[in-house]
Image (cartoon, rainbow, N blue to C red):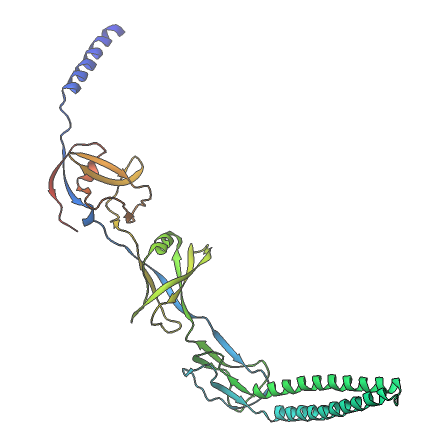
Length: 345
């Protein structure tokens, strides 16, 4: 029974094999092509960026006193060394005068002790002075000299306290806040004004780690705001990744005109090499790549670094023919017929 069933099945298989052998070759697929140079473009990338001042400082009083004057107002531009505030310095000047008087008195004592030791040396040569008295006068000279040194240091400190009654701008900048008022008593260490450096500026940008390679290869960089754009040069890629956003901070310097401190915008850069659009690669055997036209055959070129939905760098001669229409149905080695060239994009 089984034998009788196998005979018809064998005949059917023989028939199908003969039919397959007689089936003509798969007809070529009609496609359109374009030269690679017509597809290439330079992608533009961007990341949020902010202009930062290297110095955003509260300027403190370095001595105590009543504020006599605050000649600057919020928004004023001040130069390095310009007066920001002045304190009542009468008590400091009294201390300075006392220190000066003490120094003058000590100098007189040193002069007297020096003359005494000179006279003692003459008497010593004539053996008219005891060794004990001579040693005592030497000690007096050393003591008064050391006393003078200490008083001179105290006088310098008193002079410094007088100088501190005038609060000067440590750098050129913009006055952001007045933190005290005229007539107030201000203690040592209390803030007087807030000053933002307007000369030493840089831009901070948060760049996705996926974009760092393109940023490192980019030839130019700009800070683009709603009003203007500013040329930049990279200074430092900060060596840690923000785990929340998978970003790395990049610091850049202005290479020409500078934005105002606090200006926000976008860091804009362009890839250094030509890319093909994200919709051109096709997937074959798990790999993304391009379908090339080589004579009457299609060739699949894998692009190992391609990512789904992203433009991809292609290093091929610009006259390479790329299959555009009809590529979705093609495999490597399929016969093709170029019906027309697609116009440039």
